[in-house]
Length: 237
Image 1 (cartoon, helix red, strand yellow):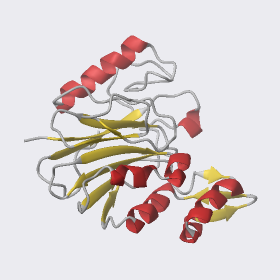
Image 2 (cartoon, helix red, strand yellow; image 1 turned 60 degrees about the vertical axis):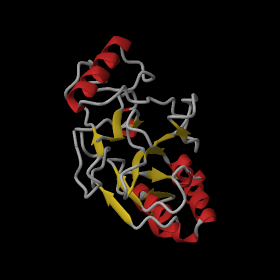
Image 3 (cartoon, rainbow, N blue to C red; image 1 turned 30 degrees about the horizontal axis):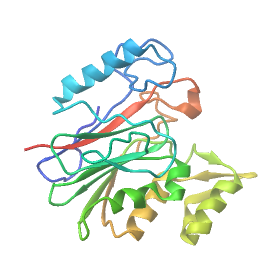
Image 4 (cartoon, rainbow, N blue to C red; image 1 turned 90 degrees about the horizontal axis):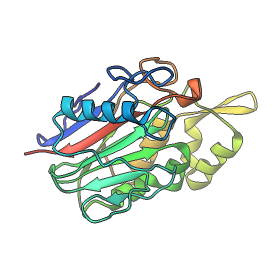
């Protein structure tokens, strides 16, 4: 599990899990945090309790029903939990997203008063989940972004239609794709950086970890039936 590896405001906490340290049995071994993948519900709930205990979280993380969209909910004001991101300006909430190859994007403002967690699969990233997350922050906020473990640019093979979808939105996205036969290798982190930079986010930090090639992480593309990691961000005193 990774804590804060980057220069964040003193009262902002982040954590990104690996697959180890839980109670789930194969193929979900062992710290699976997703209830929707076919694991035993009691095992997932036990894993979530272990996570909350180890991190001394101020509240239960606000688990979402993720749908590869662009909806970002305000945890203090929205009851909806069908979304691919959440925002909080309160110490009472823990924003969290689950991934197993998709890119987790954690955001905070430099003042340490607002945080957000975003689930950026290629569809959500292309359609604007990062922009939707940034729009939740107060105007004029100076933002910091942290990119977590995701499928890397040597493993993320996609069709020409995926490349075209990104390039139609921003021609510079072409630099994030390399031809491989009749397919392309895509750079999710690079595509996210493009969107963040275009939105004016200057501080962007990233873990250079490929979930597909590192068996310490769940990978849907590698294993199919598998668990989910969590990336969390919250405010403290």
